[in-house]
Structure formats: structure tokens, C-alpha cells
Length: 474
Image (cartoon, rainbow, N blue to C red; front, side):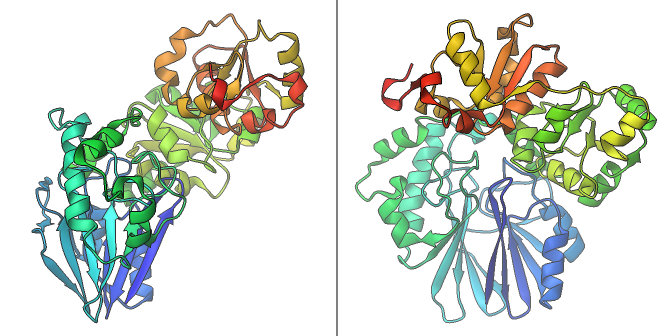
């Protein structure tokens, strides 16, 4: 028996490869099918099942492509009703995979069809549970996402279901059962996930707030529904893509998106399609020089989630600039969150653009020490935007800073004055560059990015800066 977790850090998502006696199952696959097919071929195994724990909101699953290419059966849990052929399993149904058994446990709560798969090994021992978004390490799935698709299913209703699922289906299993969750820290599908990506159920019973033995259902519902922030705007659209199917194959998306365009072709495509131009290089490269009107979302950070949060139309034509050799990676990572309309990239990058006689721009930037001197001298006059999330801002922030989370920049930019100069920072510099690029593309010219963000600011001479400690928040 072989169990392998395939973890994708950008989405904080865990897919799983399970194999026994020449047969394999894939749990919650991402959009690209090649890694799973090649893994099975290397091992001399045939993919028999594609097991989906629920209709995902934070990524588009690769189950349809994978089933078409391998002949594997797609399995969902009870109550699932997708618009394509699958096997809808019954509660407690057992699926045979080589010499092992996978038992279907219906665990509604994150969604109504949410299902946990219990692996029973060759000796009949309950070995592990693949919990999807039902149970995380240190947390459980948020109960408010379904309401974005079906308004009548409230977070309180789902939280009640989840309480029962955890206590009647999950917590009754042996303590040595290994928990294999669908996500880790950084995912928006929960609010308190651990950086660890596996654990024993027994340990989770001791440390996971949602599994407290003395917790009443009323307490559970209250705790689970408090403090939930608005989910990224692309979540409901991904649910519908996973539910309805009918989307292009990943191969078609890659072929369309990997089209090299010379500068003049790139400009013509930009004007002709009203495309969004996405610069995926490093933040340092973008700050130094970029194409006016382009938006920065760097590939080497939480690229796909930020694209999903900030690009409001999933059908938006997208042109992009990337480091040479990473073009396919850009297209795949956009497709993982439902952006299938990538139409080409700038062949030769920024150098080719400049050689073609086209203009570039740069972003004003200041280091933390120099900003500290300005801040000390002009504390009451300075306009400082903190691009971090509210929870980060509430923990600690510079006195006088306005919390202006990147998540909501599209909705809130009308609050800003184009005539004023704004200094912008986040935690480390990635989000603030994204924000500056968006604001500049909308006509805000007087922007200064603070290099290194709050991390760098906190290391400057405290005499030059004024901090609000967590106990004395604004």
C-alpha cells in the first residue's frame, strides 16, 4: 500500500495518490492531469477511482480530464448531483482498491455533499481518513461558502451538520488513525489551520478547538461562525465550474495560453481584446521597470489565490509577461482557479518590448529607514496605507496608518484621492506592489511602495517610528 500527499503551496491544497496491488485512486486532483498519470505509469498502476471530497470553491478540479484520459470512475459522496456522469456513493459504501478498502463516510457541514474517505488497510485496520475540508489540522471547514451559491443554506445550518459529522463519524474512529486534510495553513477554506499537513486523530482531539469533548452544539456553531471574513470573489464561480462541468480541457487551455506574441502582436491583442496584462515576474523586477497599465501578481508567491481575488471576471482575456521558461506554469496556475482565457505572452519579455520602441514605467520605492525619517518628521501629514488584512492590522500597526486591505482594493479605491501621495506597505512587500500596480493602472500616480513592508519597518530604530502594541490598538 502506498499513500502520497501531493501538496501545492500556492493554494495550500493537498491531493492524494493511493495505490495498492496495481490499482490507484486520486483524491481531489488539481486541474493538470499529467503528474497523476505519470506517477501511476511509473508505478505500473492503473487509476481506478477519482475521489472528490466535495465541490471545491478554491480551485477547479481536474477530475473530468483525468477520468477522460484514464477511464477512472469519478466518485462523490451522498447528495452530490453534478451535471455529468459520476458514481454517487452511499454512506458507508466500501470501494475496493487492490488489497485495501476505502469506506465512504458522509460528513456534511462544510458543504452538504462533503465526504470523508476512510482507508482500511490489507489487514482490516482503519489506517487513515481523507477529510477534504471537513477536518483540517487545527481547524475545521468554514460553513459559509455554500450560501454564496444557495442562499437558503445558512452558515448556522451547516455548522450544526458539521458538529454532528465530527462527533458521530470522525471522533468515534481510533486515535491512531492518520488525518489527511484537503488544505493547510494559508487556505481561505478555514481560519486557524496549522502549518502541519497530517496528524493523528487522537492528537487533534487534544489540540483542535473544534473537537473539544465538552463543546455543545450551540457553542460550536457560535465559535465556527464568528470571525469569518468575506471569502475570495472567485469561490462561487469555481464551485459552479466543478458542479456543472463543460469546461475546456487543460490541454486546450495550455495550448491557447502559451502563444508567443511579438511586441507589436502583443500590443494589438491588448487593444483588440481589452485584455488584462499580467506581469508575473519578481516584485523587484516589476518595481524597477514595467509596461504601463500592466498589473503585477508575482508567480513566486500566492499567485493563483491573488489572481482569483483581484481579477473579477473569470472570462477576462489575459496576456502576460513571465520569466523565460515559465510560460506554461503561468497558464496552469491561472487555470487552477478558473481563468481559462489566457491568450498569449510577450515573446522576449520586457527587453523585446523596449527594443520595439515601446514605453516602460517604474514604481517609486523607499526603504524602511528612509521612510522612518519621513514618518517621524511628518507623522500628522503623511498618508500611509496598510495593505495587510484586518486581522494583521489589528494585531499591530503604525500609528496613523489606514487599513486598506489588498483583498478589497477594487471596491475601496474610490475612498482615495488621486491628488495625494500615498505610502503603501504590507507584511513583506509583495501585496503592496500588487496594490500599487492596480492603483497606478487606475490613474493614481502619487504612490510610494515601502520596501520590505512591515517586517522591515519593525526592524528600524523605534525612536523614528511609533508603534501601536496589540494591547493598545486603535
